[in-house]
Amino acid sequence: MTATNTAPAFLAAAHREPAAHTPVWFMRQAGRYLSEYRAVRARHTLLEICATPELAAEVTLQPVRRLGVDAAILFADILLPLVPMGLALSFVEGEGPVIANPVRTTAAVARLARVDVRDALAPVLETVRLVRRTLDDQVPLIGFAGAPFTVACYAIEGGSTRQFVEAKRLMFGAPEAWEALMSRLTDLLGDYLTAQVEAGAQALQVFDSWAGALSPDDYRRYVLPYSRRLFARLEPLGVPLVHFGVETATLLELMREAGGDVIGLDWRVPLDDGWARIGGARAVQGNLDPVALFAPRPELERRVRDILRRAAGRPGHIFNLGHGVLPGTPVDNVRAVVDLVHEVTG
Ligand code: CP3
Image (tube, rainbow, N blue to C red; front, side, top):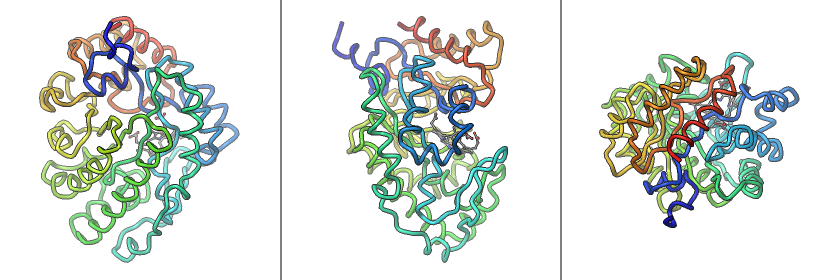
């Protein structure tokens, strides 16, 4: 056995080295589909959990224990860094995030507070330290943040949206305000991700969940420069960087250009086609349809095997969903996917 085979499978694959088996973890692997998470949530709000390192560490570890996944992801939310900037964030039951004072003008961007992340986001960094003390060496901890674009969308829209009218109105109509907001977010998110690595995160994922709302031209002009600046700043940290987005089939080459050792693929692009477009110099993560976890077991297994067949045993595949685990997902099916991936590739 070579030395690379004893490295944690997630880190080996992220470096495109042979791994003992194809690593598997799930975006949103902590959450409401787990009864043990619902038990914690019955007593605390999402923001309370994030602000309490003992609770956040506990829910970070729940899916690791329950599922046998190859990585843990820090329990936090991409919107947390907006709070110390002065945005009034709450999570409304059944509605998702709501920001009472969205940022829509140059003056509003100028009023955003300067943030010292080590102070303002100290509970998140303490969660990273706590989790690292508990985790097995074979299970690395992934830190994360939103990409500047996706975080900017929430800051401008004030919540979830389908059409991105306010975000694009600012982007197309007030380029100086867009530039100021994206610049501020890029710096803050860079500080935040750097601090997570200093606290012990062994890999980082940048969630650009809403990048797919943009045409390639708009992505290139309004988003790529900031994402590239963020990744360039993170590269010297020396941990694998995962760059994730949804509905990005037309953007994969541009996302690669922006940065990331590992590029996330959603289920709309066949894994082998997506990987060919990204090129062999990057690893890929994905790409099971989250809704496949609701399918009868033989159909679910067929889809998992199809993804593994398309990866064809090449070093550099991290098995995941194309987006996050949905509420109501049968836990047994999630566990079955972990076992099947390990069994087929081990
Ligand atoms: O297990 C994990 O993946 C770690 C924790 C995590 C959360 N949010 C906790 C959370 C992560 C990685 C995120 C990222 C996140 N947050 C994204 C990017 C990933 C994606 O899904 O595209 C986005 C867009 C958000 C913003 C956000 N947070 C929304 C839109 C919502 C409401 C929708 C929903 O799923 O309820 C949240 C709330 C949220 N963040 C929950 C969790 C577990 C569910 C809330 C709850 O417990 O009430």
